[in-house]
Length: 486
Image (cartoon, rainbow, N blue to C red; front, top):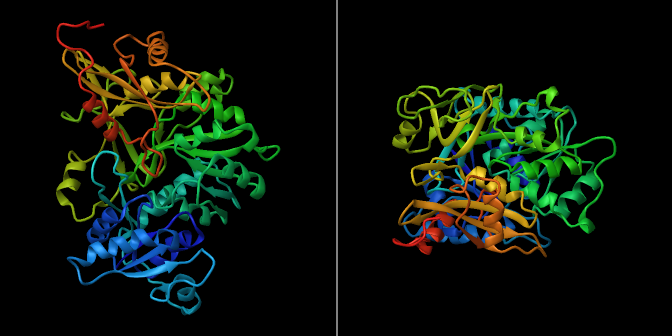
C-alpha cells in the first residue's frame, strides 16, 4: 500500500518515515510547494490509499481531492496533522488521536525482500513533469549509513532540519540521524535568522541545505546573526546544485564546516562527496573553496561513478577538459521510475544510470560538473558552461544570486543571458556586470545580456532554469543580422 504525506518539516513528518514502513506500506512524500492540480496528479499516479496532511496545507489537499474525485470515486483517506491551536475539523481523523488509540504492541511488518520499496520520491520538476523514483529498503539503509559517515555525524548529534524531508527523505538523514541517536530540530520556515536562532538555542551540530540556503546564511544581516557554538564548527552538507566557490569561502569564514555532496533524486540524494585531503588545509581560502566546489568521488554506498561518452559509453580521459555524461551504478541507485518502464529503460541504457549532467574528470580522479545537458550553451560552435559563468557572477560584490541560460541569437545560435538578484541596498548596471565577467572570462563566455530580479526556484532551492529559458526565448535575438557581432 502507498501512503502519501503532504507536510512541512514537522515532528509528525519525521515519525511517518518510520511508522509507514513499519506498517508494511510505502511512504510517498509530496512537495509542499505544489498546487492542488499537481498534488492530484501525483496522488492518482501513486495510487495512495491514505494521505497525511499538515493542517497548514489542508486547502491544497482538499483542492487536490476535489479534482481527483471528478474521475475517481475511491479517494485516499485524509488524516490531519494538527499543529495549530484549537480542535481539528471533525470530518477528518486526527493524527495524534490515531497514534494514541493505536495498539502499542503491534507487529512490525518487515519487508519480504530488502529490495522491496520503502519510499516513493518525485523529482523536483526543474526540467519537466516530476517522475516517481522508487527507493528500496536496502538502498535507503546504505545511503543513510554512507551519509552519516562522510558527514562525520557521530553519536548523539543535534540535527537542524533545513533540507525538506519530502526531498529524497531528507537526503536519507530522516533515517540516518535516528541511527546515531540524534535530536531532530524541526524548522517549518527556513530563514537565516531562524537558522542562527536554532543553532544558538539548541546547540546544533549538523544541518544541510542547498547553496541558496548557504547564500542566505552568508548574507544574513549582522543584527540577525548569533555566535556559533564555542570551540567547534557546525557541520553543514550542501548539494542540489553546484555551490559557487565564493559562497563556500563565506561559510567557512563564518565558522561552518561545509561538506559538498552531489547526487540526484535517483541516487537517494547524495551519491558523491568532495572528500577532503589534509594537504589542502594550507592552501589559501579561495583555492580551498575552488577545490571543495568539485563533486568529488563516489561514497561507499555507490559502487562506481564515471564520466562517459553517452554514445560510445567509453570513459573520458582524466584531463579536466573532455566532457561527458556523469553516470552511476550501485546499491543506492533507484529501483526505477514508478509505472514508467520506458523512462526506466532509457535512464539505465548501457547498464549505467545516466544522470543527464555533463562533467569532466580531473587528473586527481575527482569529477567536476560543467552543466546539465539541457543547460549547456552552444555559442558559435563553442560549449559554454553556465556553472563557470555563474561562479564568476557570484564573485561580484553586488550579486546575491545568479543563473545563466542561453538566449536565442540569429548569428551565434545562442548567447549567455544572466539573470541576477542584487544584494539588498547594492547597485550595479547590466553594463557593469558584463564588464566584470569579460575581465575574468573569455569574451564569448561572458553574458551578453543581464536581467535583474528574483529567480524562480523549486522548494529544494534549485533554480528553475526552464522558466528562465522561456523568458530568454521570449526576449528574442540580441543581435540582428547585419548588426555588430561583438
